[in-house]
Length: 441
Image (tube, rainbow, N blue to C red; front, side, top):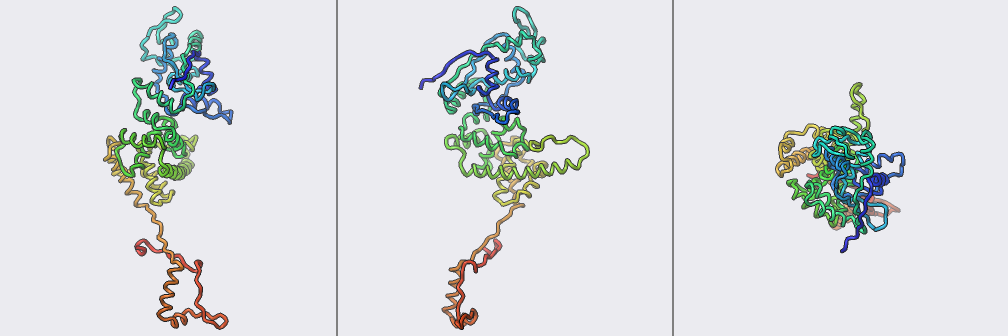
């Protein structure tokens, strides 16, 4: 199929303006920043962006080197955008997120230049020589007007793919970045897992409990996606497995075309609801504890307060513990009390599974066995109810009636208009009988 695209040049100031209006969406990191500047507008929301690309990951020095290249009117790679048709003013960034985010952040005074790793410590602008120290540590607003004008007027080469679906953009993205800065396994997995799976993981990470275990940055970065992917891998196998790249990929990629299986989705939704309640109890306890303290730093926002003993591994294990507790009918109040104490100070069996290479099968198995043993102590078994049916009782009556009808009539004697009657049973007359597991067996 012939690729339909058009190439243009746009000044950085024009691109920044389009990003502000969300006519160009870049990535989750920048979209959240753009949206935060529009808080006064209650109707403002994040416009869709290409969710499969890696998160913003450039260090300040790398972004600073880009700014220096722009100042020197050097060459930087094209920015690739795409749209679902060939007329819409709204486009998504296919490739160029790191560059666009760096430009936007600098122009909005959100980082100071760090040229300590610049390959051009001495450079020339408008026939005048400068050293990197002349602009080192400066915000955009602190640069000479000449420098600010050069940056804002710099022409970016923009290539826009038309009539391109998100799935087609994903394939372009992976192909274009082969040979670039190596992708981390989690970044490749996020790009290739499929839109339905990616959407489900994203929705899971919006649960209230998540922000009590992860930082906001970790939630929107690869860490959050990796945690849910690992948990789904363990749930899919229904046992401990080595949490290697290959094992996680095998499970997550199996969901690419059909999405996460319904039974796993249902389990994960139940887990999130359960953990929302449990972490809500933690927060209430934290509030009560803080209220008793006369000194010390006050929590500014309990809804995003993070309990520091949760790292990536512990958060995966918390999900698995909740799953086990739900299936064993453990009341959420009891789970909340246990889980807080356990993950704050795990027992030795769990700690032994955290020694090194925590992803290995033996380590994963040790942690899960330690949790299983703890949950077993809290197990709540539902009583077995044996219901006597009308047919059961009637059969017994018929048996007695056949053997000695006269004797049975004398015992069940009921007089009505001087006639002897055997009472007619209804379902309302049949009692429920609760037996222990031992009696039932």
